Image 1 (cartoon, rainbow, N blue to C red):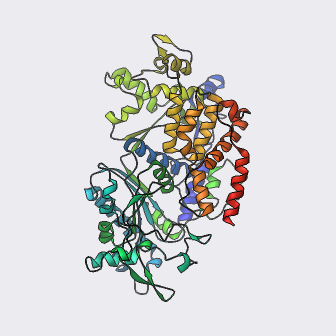
Image 2: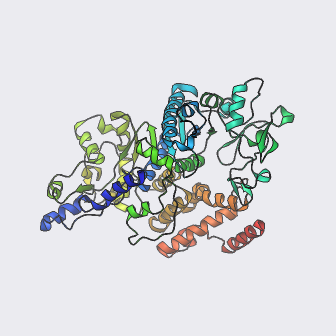
Image 3: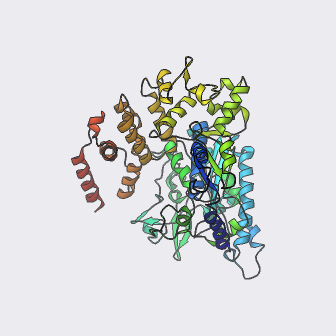
Length: 571
């Protein structure tokens, strides 16, 4: 049923792309003034970000999540809440002979209410006052619906307080039999590994979730931004239990316990994995994971029109029974608090205009306002607004977090316009933004130079600093390659030394996976791999080697030897 509903919605978008079109305002105005014909103007409207679940929609939410990181730092808690089919609220609604898998409608309704109750429980200061939160409901093709939740607290959880909030141990059955029952039923991983090679988590003979963990007597901070939780051995007052696997009794100790919050587990009696996250590296991957989108069942199918995002979205789209029911009920797949305001960045008369053939002339004469043009108007009429930066406006005039759209350095004038907006207070117009000491500059770059914003590499440093918060390693390497190839910073080595660890994150992650060793640390060989990737991009962009751009040349023989060593160790 839901597949028919979604197909109708996507068909509407596809069939109405010629009726609803977009164009930069200055181009629309010039076209109308030239021949008065609106029939041949416009860019095809593809699958928009307003379509829930589309790639653009998921990307917007990932960037919005990183806006919370910019304003409030890393999240304190990452929680995965999974529906429990044994909840009494589900079982009491089943007809005789039915199981929860037969009634996805009941499962969806109960999980939705439980999720609302959980969020209300957390926000009501269970872990302290909550600053902001967001969650995404995931409905995979197998398994039960579950929600990924990020929580930011006003008072950060200190390292010495982690054990008071999160446990990775089997509770004492004599002290708390209720919690012991919940943990034994819901919070034991596997078992897998040598005990069960057929477990779904097994990849290349090892557990992809890194179980069993090492037994340690105290919680310590791990290399990837997550703590290594206290997991005491039975000799150190830790507990163990017996579980059945393949009709055999197996003794399980704390190495197999999924981290949980005792108060949440005991209250909701479900699988609730609670993790403490402290680094930007971990939160960056979490935000991407939380908003990764729907399952795909088919890949590698070429469409006739590779630019048709509607077809690309439909190709490989897999809709499970859980997702179908959830979407038919119009339950949200994302929620967050507070909201995020997107602040536009565009050149004068460069805002995007949506129009039809009937209203094109009117749109050309009276273009709609944007957040940027509204900012200028407010500064013209409000003395207080003239003391604010563009990014500071939502703080005082709305109850939302702001996010200024990023601009690629290759779009040079718009990039320098953004640089002015984050440094100049209270501009009243595009012309006033380009005015320095009473003189109108010919370009935004010239205005930046007159204001000494380009005297050193501070603006490139800020550009990369913004990128490391919200972008992944390969994107940061691409940005760095563009900066050194086309923008010619005065000291590229300093920029490399400051951000090289962020540019190597994915390489380190891949090597850890290939070697099956999560404890591998960053090394000169990994830095060299990143430099080779950067040099390859610079050769494509400017036909220059890194040594010609002021950086140390990568050691390509080391690259060959490193790959041979990896291959030998895998064998």
